[in-house]
Length: 148
Image 1 (cartoon, rainbow, N blue to C red):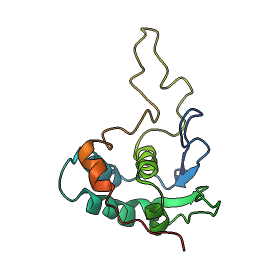
Image 2 (image 1 turned 90 degrees about the horizontal axis):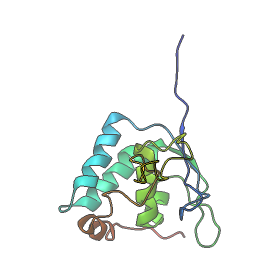
Image 3 (image 1 turned 135 degrees about the vertical axis):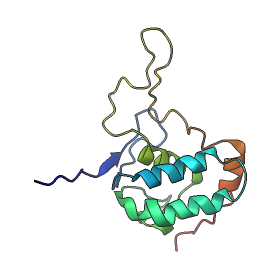
């Protein structure tokens, strides 16, 4: 008997700016997780090239479907070109959701614990390490393709 895992569905909580976005992907490999984790730790160097590498070789082939639309209400294709057409912050949230443990997370995650301290398991509570100043500056220079 064989087993194949179902695709991963990435969604965002009601109070998140990407609430309503649904992304369906193949599950990330260990190599994909390592690649995204390596980018998270970068503060200098050619981070934009690394992100493009992740998009081209890992995430775009894993992206099955999404409901992302541009400002005009036109569907953004679930392709490498479509990924480059969205804003950097949204891309980082999606990548975090892809390699993170955001599927089937209970509603309690991200709320304060009984001790009054935030839960250590946060669901998309900001962009982890991916938004440090060095990375943000590098990602701002990513080539973005306009919809034509």
